[in-house]
Structure formats: structure tokens, C-alpha cells
Image: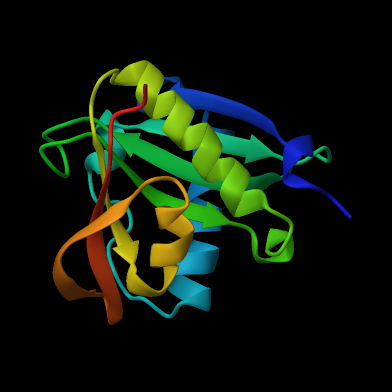
Length: 156
């Protein structure tokens, strides 16, 4: 059984992603968001070009987890973390928690002193709450899934 702590993490701006890294990220995102969650949406939304991309590699070299950090002004007025995804076979093995720990730490390094905003799937509020995120505003529908905006305080 592979544990999330065995993953090797890389954070790269879009321009530094290799074509293989980009392909693996898009493949994982489509596998979960489009196929598994049955959301028909334009995943390649133009925001990737400005984002930092977190890649969590398994010991066998496969991509097991991914998230992107979006700078202020590109999605929200605050820096944000989005496209948070783990491979289905890693669920229940703390991969999502490790991915968010990595993403929160990287966001604090890139944007020190800033709060962080996310658009979370509503059923994951408790998960994101464990990282200090609090809901703001009302529930909204995004691609057929109930979401809510959440904000975490700046890291100290």
C-alpha cells in the first residue's frame, strides 16, 4: 500500500512544466473531474498559464496527486488553490491531506501574509475546514455540483 508521505512533490510554474508533466496533470484532472464526477466543463480554462502546479509523484513515477495555485487577480482577489485532485486508488490513504498540506505551504511561500480562497465542493467543507478554511457566502452550483467559497487565514 502506497502512503501519501512516500510521494515526491514538485511545484512548477506553467512555463516550466514539461509536456509529459502537463499531459499527466491534465489526464488526472480529466479522469476525476470529467469521467468520475461526470462534469462536462472546459478544464483548460486559461488560468493554468498563470498558476503554479503541484505534482505528487508515486514511487513508480506515476502522478498520484495534483493541485494548482492561482495568483491573486486571476480567479479571485486572493491567491487560491484549485483543481485539487488525487488518483482514485489513493483515496483513504491521506493523499488529499498531504496534497493540501503541500499546497498550503507552497501558497504561503509564494504569497506570504495573504489569506487563501477556494471554491470547494460543498461536501468537502469539513476536509478544507481542517486546514483553517471557513465558508463565506452561499452555496452555488458549478457544473452540477454544489460548491461554496471558503477562505483560510494567512499562514503565520
